Length: 102
Image 1 (tube, helix red, strand yellow):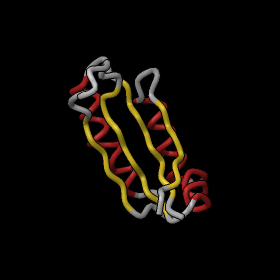
Image 2 (tube, rainbow, N blue to C red):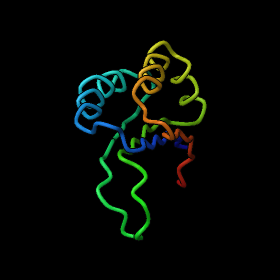
Image 3 (cartoon, helix red, strand yellow):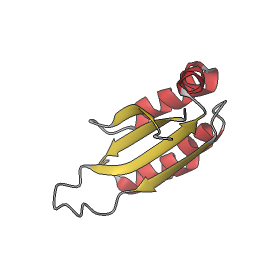
Image 4 (cartoon, rainbow, N blue to C red):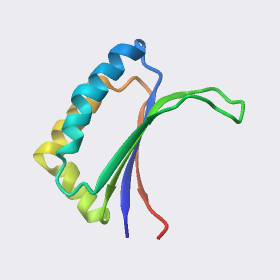
């Protein structure tokens, strides 16, 4: 049962500075998480439903199962990524665990 970590980043005060750190530092840390099968991130560019564009970026990190995800978060590298998230995430950013419908 594939599990993923879904991260929603709210609008940063300075988008260029945020992206510079996110793409240059945070992405490199994320690449090294043990057990990570793949991950992707995207910049949110529109809200077609007409609602407020509350979020700036989304990231999805895929693991073989919930246990692998939890082990990854508990690893030294997982803790490094978590610490960096806490340092750069704008207020209101969220992290969710989801199980993929296989």
